[in-house]
Image (cartoon, rainbow, N blue to C red; front, side, top):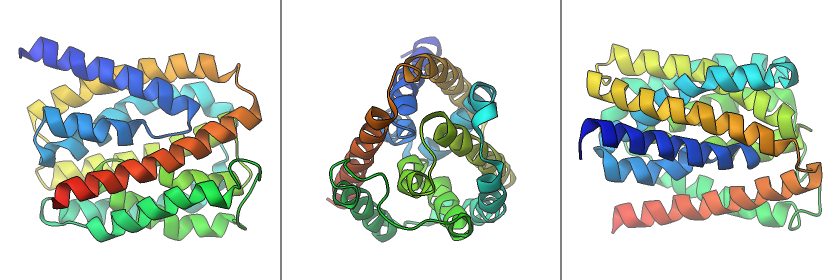
Length: 248
């Protein structure tokens, strides 16, 4: 496959997955992981995904700027930066399958936590909890490339929904992404090839975010919450299936 067609394929993958990702408050990255694992070397999937995501985030920041909960960002970002840099330092030498398996089970349990979407919250959540979450999620995400749905139950229980949830996640992820790319670059993981793929993916992600924003306006809050919960559970199942495939 020529470079042009390969980059076009990455562009289309970014557009489609992040249109859906907007309607489910995250998960586009998780859908892209198996696609990227098929298209590029496994060790390149996370850098391509995280860099492409970072390229697409400025558009999402502009689209959702007025909805961002900056207090949540203040609690989340400092520890997320530390987790990203630490994970990048031994990115190519680590496996954390057991932690991914636990997270997958937690995501699946969301269906029961929210009583199949009938409950608006499932546990008490405060801003202070975002500090350890920032470290854990950024650490795992830097290595695997996709942990977006993991934070959704915590944001929902914090009282964030629709545009506010997406805007806050985008702001937090943007600052975390800067640390991730800095870490990848410092430790020699980035290459011209990875940058080329990431740019194509990032442009597609930007377009998908715009299309998703237009569709989100027409979605009621309750439907949005049900979509988010449904995709959280699907993400958990997908994560465990990927782990089982890796171990087999």
